[in-house]
Length: 366
Image (cartoon, rainbow, N blue to C red; front, top):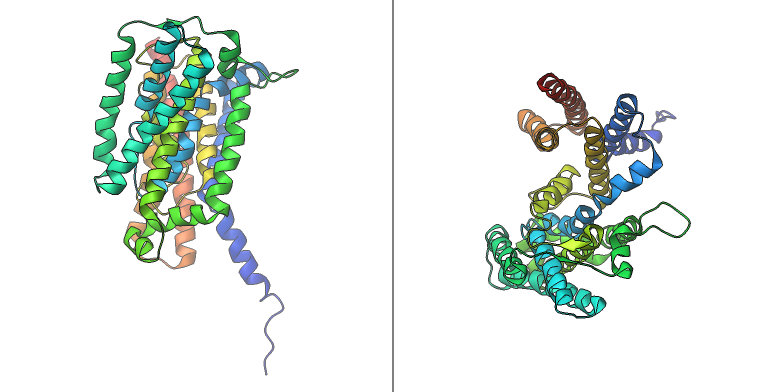
């Protein structure tokens, strides 16, 4: 009998390692490192600890809303109302503060209202079977309208120092923002729930086949209501932190952030069709966008150009892997890995080219 080669047992391990290193998360790590090197060369102020920590504060609210959004999109749904929920909760806080309420009682009620906003979305979607896109598009306008009804054109300000510490405070003896630490703790908790619990497995199952999950005994309706309620609660928490960071509240606070939240989530590898994605990928995408925007801000690139760069990166991250799979039909595993690697390389090349092209365009305009 012919004995197998001695290297045969290592083949599965090599395949596993190759598959792991071709994951989308590694592309995000590489892109982030590339952007850090480029920004360091273009600006001597990029690596200043104070600047980096201050820039991180600008994305904490997006990150907090992103965490439950990962749950929602993995199930094949979406929530367009997160920024409006943020605005309503922050406006309620400001309204009650102006009326003389204790700031912590007002903050607690704002969190409750945010959770109720998410609960309403979940009931309409899970119990009545309405499409999540339509429901949250409607509550997107409804909740923002309520925010304007509470404050009108007025701004609430004069929050006590103990409250503004949520958005402006630093950990004792360090330069680390308190809000950043809060986000890190929440990200770890959400990540463990998604990847280490039965609840997380239910989310993936629902995203892959909701009907089969229901027949298998998964509490689909309760899970949907739960994740939308959680999304509303996290949006309200983000609203409190944003109001504390600004030191004031207007009814348009946080307007437009829902697109940033969805962009970060999808760029992190969470499929818009549901069923796939990881919390690590979403957090890495948040870091990539934060580093990219901070670097472009140091070079005085206009906000419109920054939006174009981030939008192109998002489109490429969705288009290229799917295009490769479509062209290949149903490739063999090795072909699929090669296509994924090629798509990753194209993303990096196209992103780098467009980054420098946009920078030259703005400099030429000036």
